[in-house]
Length: 325
Ligand code: NDP
View 1: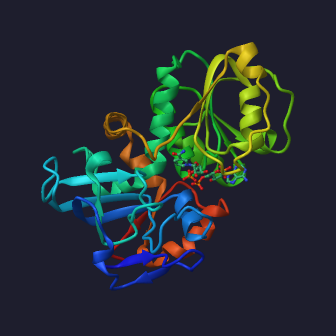
View 2: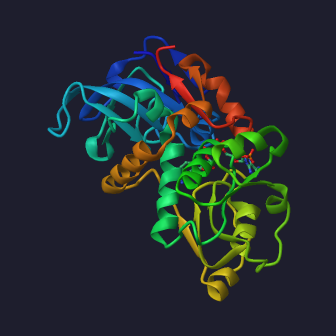
């Protein structure tokens, strides 16, 4: 099998053309048809502690065709998608032509989605949908007011903008690349494009003007503190990312004086019924032309170079990894 492998802690990742398949373990074996590059993969490839076992095949997403299964829920020929669940962290992931996985988080590919488009959605799009569901389950409707998305040009942010706009919300997209990506974000459905510096540079007052009915945050740190301070009474902020940093220099005032909710979103350990709900909704709602327009493709041989670019915030939208290339 072809695979990117991190042999030991601190070792540079390498592409092996004949990696040993006996590395793999798990009840369901499959041919990987496509994977995707996420921020977390960039962190794993850069050796920042994401890989918790060695040797490790990174790649937190995979879409594959089952070739054999010891679990009766799956059989040869089934098309499946797996995101998170320890892939690329504690278990071998999607940057390979073969995989063996545990069945408990494995989702059957919805008929509407090709393997490449499911990989284009990947963890980023799946997490964006989890965040949207979280806001709407908390009561957000298109009539509630404007919804903010931070890190909007990134993979999760881009898809969050498109999904919210598709559901009829008025979306404000915050980006550090207004000039470069303003039109792109408006095409995805953003009604307004904000320069992220107004949120990211310094922590403002703990309660600011109540600008947003809700928010999806990919960024954390000072940005999230300001987002909480600008969220309207009763609003929810769904937070999943740390692209600016893992700190949160905030006060409790938005929670106790405005009833704001900070809702954490974890895609990795997401239970199967919620995974199926999110993929079902993605299959119904994703505009495939829009998805294609925000997706680029790279071969497995380019993954290692792309890791630095995603960590530097230079990648726009989603990147599919063609594992046979
Ligand atoms: P991307 O790299 O594709 O997007 C991140 C975006 O954040 C960038 O495009 C950029 O957008 C913005 N950004 C980057 N650096 C900074 C900075 N220093 N300050 C403010 N904004 C910044 O990553 P993903 O979309 O794949 O993931 C986004 C985040 O969410 C990551 O932290 C990732 O680890 C996390 N994540 C967490 C998940 C979970 O289950 N909790 C699942 C998926 C992702 P712009 O140029 O528009 O400002």
